[in-house]
Amino acid sequence: MKKILNLMFVSAVVAFGMEFNLNSNDGAVTNTTPLKQVDSFELKLNDTTPITGLDYDEASKTFLLSDLKLGFYTMDESLKNVKTYAKSTKDWIIQMEDGVSASFFNGSLGVMSYNKTYEFFKHVPNQSEEDANKAWRYLPVGFENFTLDFKDRYYTIRAKQQYILSWDHSDFYSEFFTASVPDNIKPYWSIASFSDSDNMLSSEFIPSFDESLGVKDKRDISDYYITGMDANGEFVYLLSKQYSSILKLDPRTRKVVEVYTFSGLTNPRALAMKDGKFYIVSRENGINKIAIFEK
Image (cartoon, rainbow, N blue to C red; front, side):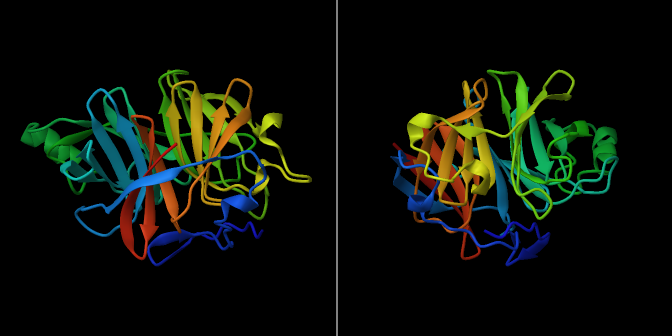
């Protein structure tokens, strides 16, 4: 499999100069858990910019979505109604690049770019004209209702020369998790975690498969390609476009303990979990779609 990261965007989606195998039967393990699709619908948003990030907050019954151009939405739990919308600029303090992921954290809404730079915004409806004018520097859209909480960049060791496409906060571990993607320099990917108290690197490792999954001869985790994730309880769920799979990772053992498989999507890009179901954002023929799967 060709692993050259090509930062070109074809048909408004990230194209990585590699051929993906969407057939889950060709994955690295034999013992998988097939998922069944229970719903699918188009996201009705402000425009057709590709959605690249998804997260769900159980307390507020709210989804957070982010797009390629650093726009972000909050939507109700049906994903049918937009609550709020704003759009950030790349060029303010620390350089952002195109957006790849989204995460809730302590009431703030976070957006991540592929260069590991992230920013969090607080929803402050009807703020003063003075504060709105300040927010206009970094929010050309939505400045009247949002303000910057904090902005920073993660620094890794193992994945120093690699980009990321996935990111989420874990309340269980009080950490943020990222997964890198392979490229022509490093033909593997790794997981990194960062303390949410100081945003410093806590761990960085290459996960492996639990032996119970029946790993095929001369196969390993390296040729999966992680485009989204959801940190849910004690596990981190990793969405892989390669082999149309979701890898259930236990960060304590650094092993994938279950592999879920799905079908019917050509460009799965973001993952969130709600009520035990998997919500996947996929870009299908220029349309942002949500597909919902369950065991």
